[in-house]
Length: 268
Image 1: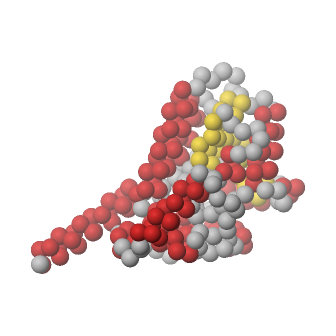
Image 2 (image 1 turned 180 degrees about the horizontal axis):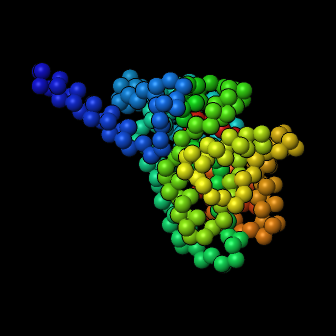
Image 3 (image 1 turned 30 degrees about the vertical axis):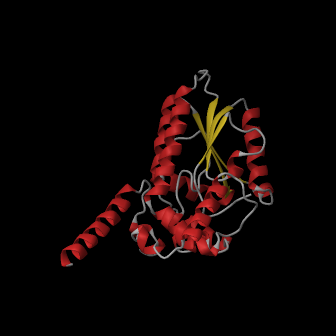
C-alpha cells in the first residue's frame, strides 16, 4: 500500500512538472499579482460529472466555432473546466497547431516583392497573454471590469505567447509587412510598445489602436474600417491572426484568417 501511495504521489508530481514545462508562453511568477498555482487537472475535474464535462466541452467548441450569441461570462458550472484548459497542455497544443498551420500557409504564398504583402496580428491573447490577470478574475467567470483591466495593461507585463512569436518571426523572415491592429485605446500606445518589445516583438510596420472617434464602435466595425484603410494604402492582407472572431470577420478581410483559442471572454 505504501508503495502504491508513493508511486501515485510521484506520478502526480511528475505530471505537474511536465504540465508547467510544456506551457508555451512565459508566466513569470515575479510578474503575477499573486502566485499562479497549477494543480494536477484530475484534482479539479475528478468530481465533475460526465454530463457537465461534456456540456463544457461542447460550450468551448461552440465558442471557437462562433456558434454562440454574445456572452459576457463563462458558465458558472464551467469555471473549473476553463481553468483546467487554460493552465493545462491542451491550450498550448491548440496554440502550437494554429502557429504551425499559419506558418505552412505563409510559406506557401508567393510574395510579389513590392513590400505590400501584409500579415495582420491582434495583440491581446494573440501575441501576448493576459492570463495572469484572468487568473485573478475567475478565468472569465467575473463580468469584465474595464477599469481593473486598464490597471493591469498599464503594468506592461503581459507575457509572450511563444507559438505566436515563432509565427511572427517566420512571416517577418518571409518578407511580410507586419501590421498590429488592437482594440486597445491610443493612450495605451507607449505601454503597449514597451510590453511588446519586452516580450520579444521588435519589428512592425504599423501599430493601430483605437482613437477617440473609435471608442463607441464594435470591435468588428473598428477592425473592418482599419483593414479597409490598410488595403486602400495598397497593402494586400494575406494573413490575419486573432483570438476573437471580431478580429477576423467583417469587411476587407484577409485572404486567410487564423483563430487562436480563447474561451475566457467574448468581444463583439
